[in-house]
Amino acid sequence: MSEIIVITSGKGGVGKTTTTANIGVGLAMRGNRVALIDTDTGLRNLDLLLGLENRIMYDLVDVTSGRVKFNKALVRHKKYDTLYLLPTSQVKDKSAVNPEQLVELCKEMQKDFDFIIIDCPAGIEQGFKTAIAAADCAIVVTMPEISAVRDADKIIGELGRADKENIKLIVNRIRPQMVENGDMLDMEDINEILSIDCIGQVPDDEMVVTATNRGEPVIAMKDSTAGKAYKNIVGRLCGERIPFYKPPKEGFFAKLKKLFGMF
Amino acid sequence: MCKENLFRFYSLRNAGVIDLNDIVKIKGLKSGLQLTFAKGASFDDVQANLLHKLQTGEKFFIRGTTVFVPKDFFAEEQNEKLRRMFHRHGMLFSTELKMPTFPKTPTKTVVEVKKAEEPAPKMLVINRTVRGGQEVKTESSVMIFGNVNPGAQIVAGGNIDIRGICRGFVHAGAFGDESAFVVADRLMPMQIRIADVIARSPDNMEKAQQAERASIKDGHIVFEPIMR
Image: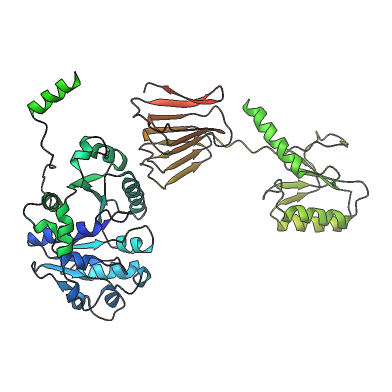
């Protein structure tokens, strides 16, 4: 039996699609059979991040409306051959797919895959309700910023209302320097409000932008800090216990300097 | 203090609603509503008057209330018409008054409103965190085992007890009980209201260090540390 994971956030622009692509690639690198479903109908991006836009033949709407079987619409990744993408339509809107159709589709796909990862649209409307319907685990992505945390809180409430109890948290785009200066929420503040199990802390990394534009997820880049964090997330999803990466602590001399600075 | 306020509130409301020259007078009793009609009022006028009151949603005419009408004022069949009209609006109709302590022919009746029945003391218990956008509303007191997150709303007729961190919006004594209070392990609400007194959080709030209790003292909301 495969696991169906929905990646959601409430707020837009916190990195849902980036997280979906990276976790997908990460799981596939470990040899799992992974399907990524983009449910952000009308604003699809997942295919861009994976560099698969030119290979799309059919989309999610074609599948749910019964025009083609799902395996015809799946696009295999050019590099990782156990990774598949089910893109959505760019011309239709969110009402084109309803929750029952997606549940049905996921049930069918479960036989062929180890992981099905659903990329959820921003917001809490129809698109969100459709995306979460089939999932048995949800990953909430947020940023260390008051509005993103507030929206994540709301989303967790909504997931609870839909009886989704298995909820994990990823905090994206952390800037360690700002956190240290007290200009950004730290993990303690976020955990205090959201109080759910955190499986990832991803630092803000310029290479994510490069990776997005190139169409190859940052997890595959060797010297990226964000890529490393995503690798750890994938490990934790597979049940490994990996401690969170912490920026190196101040050395003895730095402490001494600070002490003298005080006088 | 609280009772006085309640009374003032009611009497204010009455002033707007009751016209003393009305041909129908209403008096609230423990067992229902007593109607008296002006001398010489015709049945048609009374019926039209009552129908208007019923349709405009007069506040006294709550479903399930018994309406008492003087037995001999109108003929039997006319009473029957009234009975049917009240039944249609979900009220009971009676010509026999069970209350013997009815003052005789009050000239200028000061109309009382039937006081809302005191709800049985009870407590709502919530065993989870109340998250942003969620709302808890209750007539009774409420106890929350979990946090109240920013953006959440708790409105209670009685007291509010939070076994966790309170960062949302809390309103205790929502029906005017100024003796109501709010207790939390860490009390840092966005806004706190007790009865009709409002306080908002300071613009740069410090983290609370211990359990606190908020209540009204001299017309202001005051936080006091408590042990628990």
